[in-house]
Image (cartoon, rainbow, N blue to C red; front, side, top):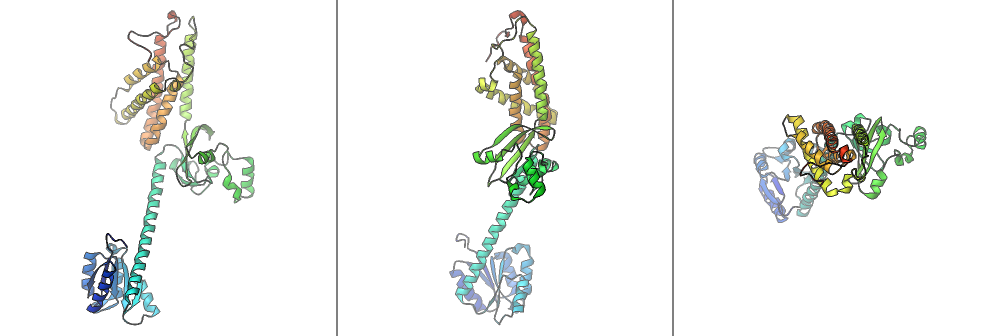
Length: 420
């Protein structure tokens, strides 16, 4: 029983001395109590007092206790209120059944010994508390399930929650459209059995309910690695269904894993296109009298050669991409073109390569795509493609302007510029 807020008991009996006796007993036990000697008065008190328990005599001068019990149980404002029916005569099994059918939680024969009365009240309140906790737990589970589904559906790529046996617990719309089924194996429904071993495929055909299938997995699956490390595991390139996927296995809780696959086919296409552009730049440079040397083009990627500066560039590109999405969605002007030109010059002065631009773009896009809604994510994808192409074009222009064959293939600087 909650000692800070005593539970309330309403006693309805047309015998005043019984009302007073029951009231004294329950109040001495720590309950808050009020009594009424008629159904009319009882209804008024019930509405005002909002009791947790009602002790109700079935035979009152102004009405039938069973009918009043039905009325209480049918009223939403008294949801969860317990009703103990009291009778001064022997209760037959049919009468007890009538009381229970009316919604009563218990049927007691008067007179009632104080110890029995308190024991009955305490037991029913304890059961009510357990029921309330179960309802709250179920509601929390429902909320969690809805939240998980909302979170999954907000992701712009196929995503599934899996248990240790790779059974799908939840899947977003994209994954379901690709075949994922809640309660099924991800490798069977989503993977179409294309990436399991020949032995597993044969076992599935001969014994579809074989226990050994619980350990089956796709050839590239890293769920066990994620389970052992208790940290996200990534496979950057998985070729499946005619596309290229950046795939993640992320431990969530209680043996659940988020299996998330980002379609990077377009990104890979862009990377290849930019690689071709870089090759064109190299050919242009090689056509001069002296070839571009390693002194000009750094071998180490920018994020390794200058990690502090690279973090600054990540922030700049993230802001630019956010502005590009705003320009596309809201038709405003944030001078994205000018800022991309400046970023390209910064990258050029750092002797960045196309791989650095692509790495910069992918790093920012992965972060943003995980944060955005479906509509914003789609806009971000479209804006990102244009932004990446424009940035790469600006960088190429920067190098073309500053690599002079007459200067011995040295990178020329405008007045006041310096490589930082």
